[in-house]
Figure 1: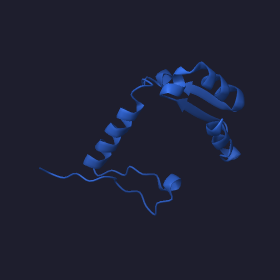
Figure 2: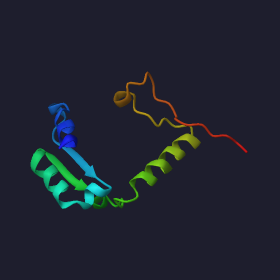
Figure 3: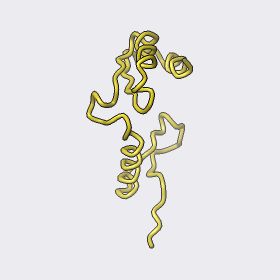
Figure 4: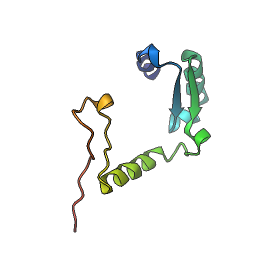
Length: 95
């Protein structure tokens, strides 16, 4: 319920939105049903529907962060985090 309540606070001008669910929640039929019922204007899907296994989302995210760092590409979103600018996060320490 708390996740749904937070999603409902989003700007309604952004609707319709898409919610991609991963991890244990994506395996729980009750949670998926609640999302669908409580967020009728949202398209609710599992990440597996887009070729990303629900159990590997975190590892893919860390791989993306590492790629961004190694190529000095921004990995934050100032519009989301409130940061003053986009930067490449993390530090690489050579041996």
